[in-house]
Length: 297
Image (cartoon, rainbow, N blue to C red):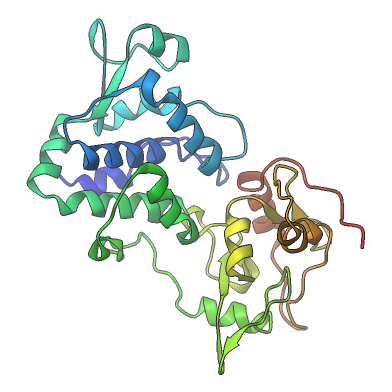
């Protein structure tokens, strides 16, 4: 059985690029628990809070429940659910999962495959990360689910469904004159830019093209905050800061809160700015809550 192909084709609700990472997050969590204890089961009541935190932090902005993937992932033959009454899930309602003592774990065939071939776990995890999340979130997401991947497993061991354009970073950094479009940071070591990255506005995993119109030159800090939904790009190409962001230190105020309403720096004349379709996708699928009012200078 080709487990990588099965994982790559998890059945997910999809419409107009909507993110639905519920099943991938549950599967990553289950892999982390399997790595820790291959014989462990996951009672819904014991893992509900962990799964809710993952969905809140790495899922779409709209409210959702871990009961949905806990029930529906069994339809993909990589997960099984049992209750006090026997095999099978009682449904996707939170009350039913709690009342029946629902317990889930990886499907028997997948558990057996992971025991026979330990490196398969890392390949599955990397595939889930590549297909559903931007690279800037991979490391912290592994920590959040308790996964420890060996260096060899962190390479792109699974062919991507479509190739990336290796020129994108240079094209985007050149378009924005090698400075962060949010804060203006332009650090170098000699002639080499350091701490500057090409961020996809619409994530590559969700059809975002490797084009300048889908890219921003951001410093490492603002790239991470952009992918976490703390920062966005609004009408008039101005920086949005989520009301959900809280930071009381002078550094937080200066480097995040003070950006609200600030116009983007760049791109240089003759280069098209971020396309509205990509900007709108990010606002709907990544940006958290409502934006703060523009900062008063």
